[in-house]
Image 1: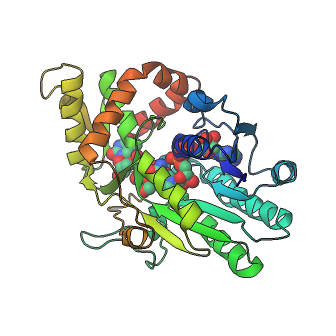
Image 2: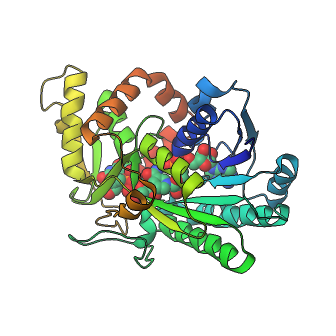
Length: 351
Ligand code: NAD
Ligand code: DAU
């Protein structure tokens, strides 16, 4: 049926893959991409679909309640897939309030707008995209399940945990039909080069130091971004109201092992002597409050909705490296402006 779906944060990394998937897979839907275009939002990420007849872009700030309500009035959305957020942990340590505004206030504004405009909740859905970081940090053993108690420990994860709670509160108190997913670390094309993988790929290309926080012993569970987008599609259409679904790759890597694998792939791709990229590894001051290990149990999503990741990690990593090597202009464009100065300051502080 001809639904109109609002996707927030669609110009960012994950959002752009979700928008593309929905625009292409559901020509009968109208997809409205709402994005403020912060440093992390880039319309170049959607060049290939920007002229599709079922795609509309609206530049707006979710912190501005009035602006958001006007858009709900204008389009009478049938559903919302909410990804807009400040997403980088290091930035949340440097500037927590921006995370409170975008992630907490922004989410509440969307919940309020949906509640106000959906007189009849039948067939409506508010899907909140969240993170595994809300569960805190694991030791050597165990996995996060949907029943793991919340224990956020960075300003970023605290803001996301808070937004998850508000989404559940609007479900419980006002009957808003909601669904939430909590996903592990994504990687793939179009990720802003301040996160580990794209930053290190770019630094290897440009022969800059690779700043490994602490001893590089922290563990993350990596998932290819398109597999996350596929899960979002499935949960949006088939997930149960009021439920939470964990999404993860069953793909844990200690940072240093991952970085060494990346270095060896980059040496081959750039036709450099084996060991060249590893020489760029530089141990720097650890991230404050650095969570040791995240790992997701995604069996609920697998059992109930039949989702499994489609891509082997080494294949996904090579695809990602190939994409960055073929898109150096994209890297230059998104890192122009204030980013170089910001990165230099961060790096100097950590040395
Ligand atoms: P991103 O930083 O690449 O993109 C965020 C997007 O939100 C950008 O386009 C930005 O312009 C937009 N935005 C930020 N503040 C806004 C505001 N006030 N109003 C409107 N738009 C605004 O982030 P990402 O990595 O694509 O993450 C997307 C979502 O998925 C976030 O909610 C994040 O918490 C969640 N998530 C990310 C990961 C990951 O590994 N990257 C994993 C799990 C969950
Ligand atoms: O787990 C999901 C989360 O994954 C998402 O919710 C976040 O939005 C996303 O940014 C990501 O958070 P992380 O903090 O895990 O990702 P990041 O790429 O910043 O760091 C990955 C690991 O690499 C982490 O242990 C810190 C380390 N690191 C990171 C950077 C940027 C380094 O050692 N050096 C670096 O320069």
